[in-house]
Image (cartoon, rainbow, N blue to C red):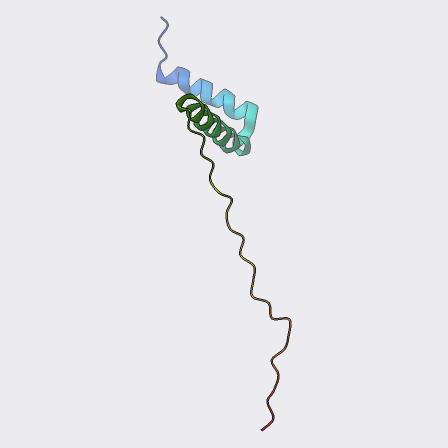
Length: 70
């Protein structure tokens, strides 16, 4: 009595799917992972943030190539 069998876990997962839907579950898991990571960083005292990704600008081709007359 008090132990969860695989049937109980399947029922819990079915209820979660009904409540949140298939699209929200990955977002919830990602948010939970970020929260756990933030908590671990807070507990260890190290606060390192990843630098923002570098944005690359496309090569500008505003000026047309000039034809050389020889």
